[in-house]
Length: 282
Image (tube, rainbow, N blue to C red; front, side, top):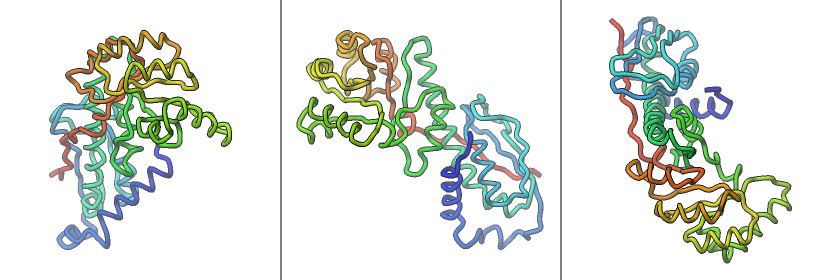
C-alpha cells in the first residue's frame, strides 16, 4: 500500500487518540532503555492485509523499531504463522501495539471476507464492488483491503461519481428531472463524472433507457429473476449493477443474472476482525 499524506495523517490522529499524554502503563514498569523483540502471530486463517500501515504506525511511534517481515498483503495466512518480528525499545513497541493490531485485524478481516465472496463468483464475468458503508476516517484503509481481497472499489466518496438514488430522484421530482439536473450541473461546473441512477422497478428501468443521459443503471433490491429481465431490457447500452440485500447465500444467484457489477456493503459493514496477536519473544 502506498501511504499518501492523508493516510499518514489519519495514522497520526489514531496514535494521538490512543496515547494521549503518555503510555503510563508501560512507562511505569519498564525502563525506557530496555530493548526487546516481539512477533505478530496469526491466530486465525485468512488473507493478510495492513503490513505497510503497521510499519507506518511503528515509524511514527519510534523510528528505531526494526521490522523483519516474512509475509505481505494478499498472502494466505494460517493459524500459527508469524507475519513479522520487531526489535527495539520495549516501551515503544508496547505503545504502538494496539494501533498496529487495530489496523491489521480489521483490514485483514475485510480482505478475508472479500476474498470469500470473490471466490464464490470467480467463474462468472461479474465484478464485485464495495460501497461507502465504511468506518469514519478508515475508508482509505478499508477500500484498500477490499482490493487486496480481490474485489474492486466503487466511488471513493461523494465527489468522484454521481449516484442518483431514490431520495435524490424523489426530491428532484422524478427520474428524468434528476438526470437532466445532474447533466446540467456537470456542464455548469466543468465536470466529467460518470452518472449512475438507482431504479426500483422495471418501469423505472424503461424510463431511464428511454431518457438516456446516464452511464450505469442500478437494480436496487431486485430479485435475481427481475434482474435477468432488467439486463435484457438494457441490452448492453449501459453498465448494470445489482445492489441491496445481497448476502453470501444469494450472491451466486445474482452473479448468474448477467449483471456487470454487484455492490456488497458487507465487505466493510458486516465483517469480523481477523484474530492476530503481537507477543513478546522470550
